[in-house]
Amino acid sequence: MAEIKLKLKKKPELPLEADIITPDNLVGKTIAEIKKLAIYHGKEVVKLGDFFDISGKSTDINDTKIIIEGDLSNVKRIGEKMSGGEIVVNGNVGMHVGNQMNGGKITVNGNADDWAGAMLQGGELEINGDAGHYVGAAYRGFWQGMKNGTIKVKGKVGNETLAWVNGSKPGNRFPKLICGSAGAFLGIHSHGGIIIVEGDSDRCAGADQVRGTIVIKGKISRLLPSFKKIGEVNEIELPNGEKITGKYIEYSGDHSVAKNHSKIDKKTGEISNSSNGRLYIAA
Image 1 (cartoon, rainbow, N blue to C red):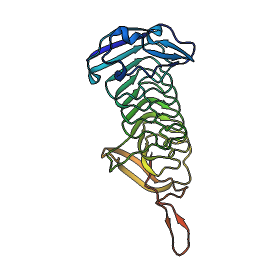
Image 2: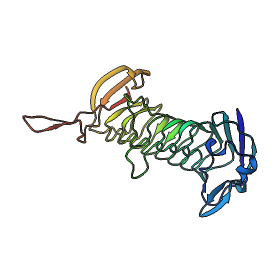
Image 3: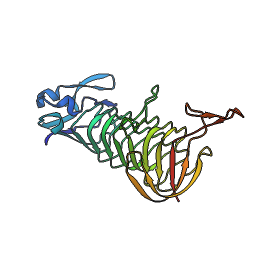
Image 4: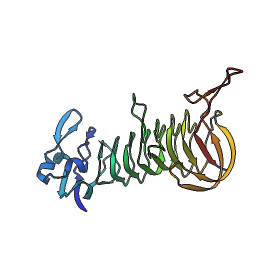
């Protein structure tokens, strides 16, 4: 695999908008051309070569790896909308890494700021540290977040991770998150996501969930009262066919909000909210 190497010369004083750093944008260009690519440093237009030492070469998009070295905690939007190839970040990274990507793989060997993998359409984002709030979530004003692909976070994810996630079994779309632990409102407004938490989760996981599966292998600080206990299970079959074994308590929900698939009792007129969402917590 051909490699393009970028080494940060100095940490930018202002946020650096680096959405140009994707295999899609760098493939087919010489190193001299890559150095001249325009990026924003605050409100100023600068060149990529002003902030990075750049070397290597590329072939085609799916056979190109971009390796980035340095503290990129103030560098945003790396890998935005990428469709193939690979990016490896050896260090912390700023907001919006891998947002709206639909192919390829991004590995962050450090921590990631807010909105990592926001509205992911496909591909794989792996973060070997912690991630901020809104991982894989829908941006404000949108009602569909992550729709496919996989996000893996070794450490903790922040609040409202996978908000408005939208999967489809008939459409063969199974957006999936695996994380070490999670903040509050995990999977809020879920419409078909798969979420696996290896440790504990903060309060209100699955709030307003219509479809989807959340598996918490540790404890939850507060379970919403709108989830109904079904019973104990020893095996969980995920929507994508994968199975998880162990002792879990199964709940259905969220039953708090009337949805399009709610049922009205003809005799009493009462609404009986039916939810296909499932929440599993270690027994």
